[in-house]
Image (cartoon, rainbow, N blue to C red; front, side, top):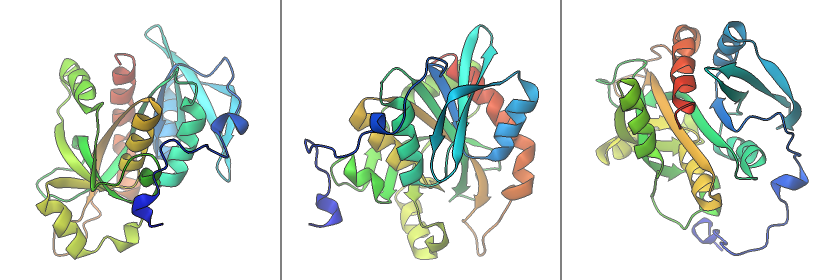
Length: 251
């Protein structure tokens, strides 16, 4: 059986999230999920946060925090990077189907005209990873059904953004020039490591999941342009967290 035949829609699962993770009453219904420790630190420094009693584990302990904002209780956690890890942890949080999750993090731009820090809302994700093929029939792209609702909230907040296709790959050190140009020719404006898998899982399970990304480094040039990736990204993490917080209370 090839990878393209691995979607077993009605197959009995051997391991389920509820066998690993026990939900506790102090996990908020609305959560933002981040990929950058600087974002975590920014929220912890600016809000009165409490650790939830539940803990997740992906080779290390992952705390879940909560805080109050404008009458809402919001949760957040730092997700591992990469499709398999981020989906596994999301399954543990979302399996009761009583949560709303908003993921956000940096991406690589495939268009040099997209400025650093520009917000992007993926509408389709190219499936250059393995996890999504266990949650959806084989196809090149997965359509992101929650993108329109997220865009509506950004319009309400008057947050500038751009809808676009994204290329999801786990092998970021194998982002070759030829593959980048092929994805760009198909209309992809960015590359990330999780979107296709997160959305395939969410749509298969019926989880309420949203995602936006912001441009960091740029692959569209004669050489890779680091731009704000790394230490330079720290300066905008608080801004992105604020946007996510205002967004999740409206979803």
